[in-house]
Length: 383
Image (cartoon, rainbow, N blue to C red; front, side):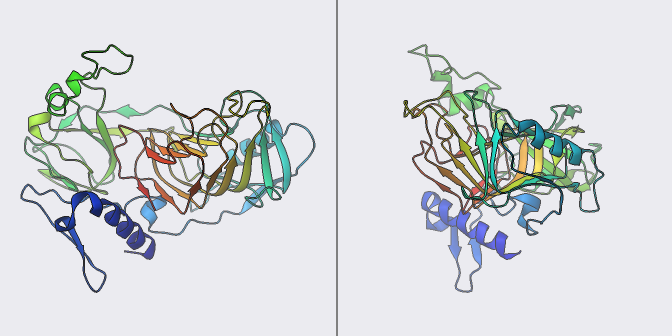
C-alpha cells in the first residue's frame, strides 16, 4: 500500500474511531492498523480505495497541445473551440489526448465550458488572481465548467446475491451457480430500500403528521448502488475491486447485481491550476442571480481537480454528482460564497458519487463545507 493510501486509510479510520469506539480498531506500535471483526462479519470499511486510480499512482502531468491566450471580450467560444479541438485528437497509451493551457490573466466566460470527451485536461497557469482567472459573468445560474459524459448506461438482467447476510466491508459476494460473470465485468450492486428497511429505521412514519413536500419516503427512494469491477470469479461467487460500505441483509431485501455497459461515460478528465471568480451584484450581498457552481462532474470516472480556487459562487467549488466515481479533489479552495444560507447553497465540496477523495481542501463561510449526499454508496473520503 503506497503512502497516499496509508495516510488516507489512517485518516478515515481515526475519523470513524470516535463513532465506533476503541474496540473497533487499534493502532499498533509499529503503525499497523488492527481491525476488530464482529460476530456477523462486519468491520470498519476500508476507505483506501478512494481517488483517481484508487490513489495507487500519482496524478499525472499531461502535456499541453493547445494554448489559449487571454484576450479582451467573452472567451467562452474561444476556450470551447480549443477543448473541442483536443477532443478530436487520438488518445495516447496512457489514455490522454492532451491538455488545453489557458494563459495567465483574465478570461471572461459568459457561458459554460464543457468537457465531453475522455483524456482531456483543462489547465491554467496559477490558481491565484494574478494567474489564470476565469471570470464567470452574467446572471445565469449555470456552472462555469461541466465535465459531462453521456447518460447511456445499459443494464443487463439482475442477478440475485445469495440469500444470506453479507457483512460490511466485504469484497466477496456469494451467488448461485451459472451467474455468468467474468473478470473485468463492470457491475452495479444494489441494496434496495424495501418497506422492511424503511420500517426498521422509522422512515415509514416520516410525514405522517405534517404533509410537507419531500418528507414521505417510499420503497425504492433510497436504494444504494455500488459501482464495482469484477476481479475474480468462481462458480458460486465474485470478488470485487473495492469493498461494500453497508451490509446486504436478507431480512431487508438482500441485494442484487446488474452487469452494465456504459459507452458514453468519460474518464481521465481533469481541471487544474486556475482561479474561478463569479461576478455578482454588489448591491445585494446575498445575490443569487449569478453562477452557483464552479465545476460539476456527471457521468464520468477516474479524473481529478487540483489547485483550483473558486470565489463568490453561490454553492459549490466542486460538485461530483451521482454517476461519478474515483475522482481526486486536491488542494482546492472555496472562498467568500455569495448567496443565501440554507437549502443547496454553500455546499463547498459535495458528492453524491463514490470512491472520491477530497484532500487538503479549504472552505470558508460554508453551510456544508464537506458533504456527502443521502444515497452516496461510498466510500468517499475527506482528508
